[in-house]
Length: 80
Length: 360
Image 1 (cartoon, rainbow over the protein chains, first blue to last red):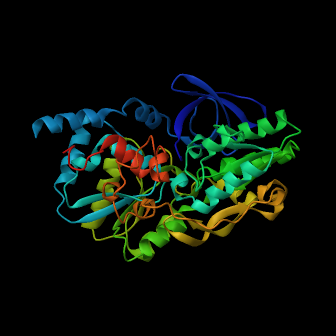
Image 2 (tube, each protein chain N blue to C red; image 1 turned 45 degrees about the horizontal axis):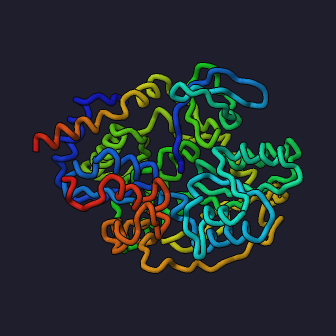
Image 3 (cartoon, chains in turn orange, cyan; image 1 turned 45 degrees about the vertical axis):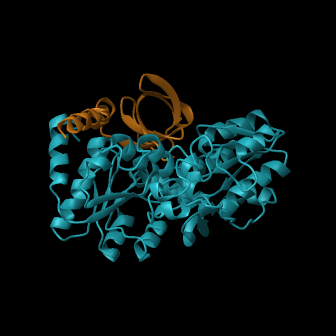
């Protein structure tokens, strides 16, 4: 339930509403809990709210490399 | 952190070389799912155990509380807005999904702000948001209450069943029947609460606590950080998931919790009543407390016959040890909440390791 996904802030409008890009989907969220968030920054999104501002390079990495271990696991099972 | 294949292979080899017997508990449903999906459990040597703890908010909700919600929607003319996870959770007589099938107006939302919007769109109806979740989810729900007040949306209220993670960890560490040597701490709860609550736990109980992220490499590194502490014969609270978790957490979210909620004693499935582990709407915001607006019954917890969710949530047994697992209880016909919720331990085991030992 505490699922969070990284999203990049595309625009910020009134009342702490921002549009974020999550995996190429544009989603409207609230940044009331991260008032310092700026356009271009990555935030961690949960239940329609940005919960924390993230380190950009790390966020991109975490999205791109989710499946690596499964491949390694296959290699291991062949070796055994 | 660098997720590349060579580094992960090195980490796996390093973990496999460990000879001490260590049980680590993960206390987050998202970890439960990530660990099951990755197959990491099967790559570990027999002396390192990963056990699932009370990390799924839907699963730890007391049976009586679920029954009270179902009675509320059956008795009152209102719109109940809830996260999708709650729909199929079995109450004693029915689930919310079955109640909806019989005519109750129950709507699944992604954000509590969707429920506030719903209240604005239906000004003559009462909209109740079912607040379930830990410290990650409670600030968004609190913020929705503050937004409703700012917009003078008076037909919005919240039934808060929110729970706090650290008091449950105290119970886990204090129970002599639960063998846990270290904690893989919840990444997203910790976004909000930061490192301090775990520092207290690590010092008091002398068990390493590492806030860990959800990628495979994160989990492997979190395990290695725990193993390193054992080698050093130390017990510290540390953050592996640095790209998201700050040492002080999120003070803005913490302040929302302080303003909108107050700590109360509450019942957990499997753990019983834990002092100060629940969040009720504060007196300041009592106009938005569904308990003040509707007569919500206090229903006793009636255990589900044969269901071992309580023991599974506390790591006393593995889902494979439950006699109902995979036979009478499966995702199509779930008997207990741990099989219903997408991130429940039984659902995770059923999906990724349905037969013990077969995967190795």
